[in-house]
Picture 1 (cartoon, rainbow, N blue to C red):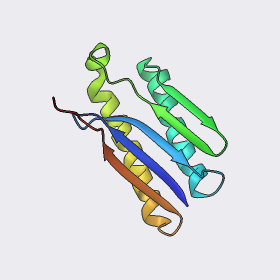
Picture 2: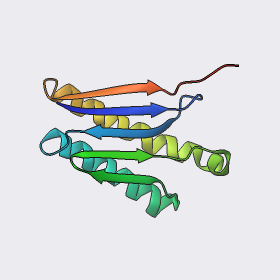
Picture 3: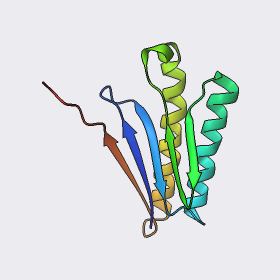
Picture 4: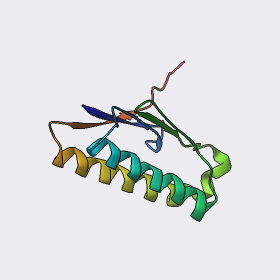
Length: 109
């Protein structure tokens, strides 16, 4: 089963995607959707992020630090659109595809 985990920060902004078992079918569709967004952030916003693909898995980490806060609206629009696409894949391939939308752990002292 293809699994994509959506990571969010303490402000509920998407800050990463992790995918596994993406070898074919809906997994490859998810991978290409994510790759398109990586390219869009880079080419259009000149925003570099950390994307890695290896052995049927991918990881994409997005720096949501204050240094890029002026781009938050644009970044949010792209990342939430990716999530919409992933949820459509999940809906259409229910037996083969799952999306988990997670909030980052916040420790309180």
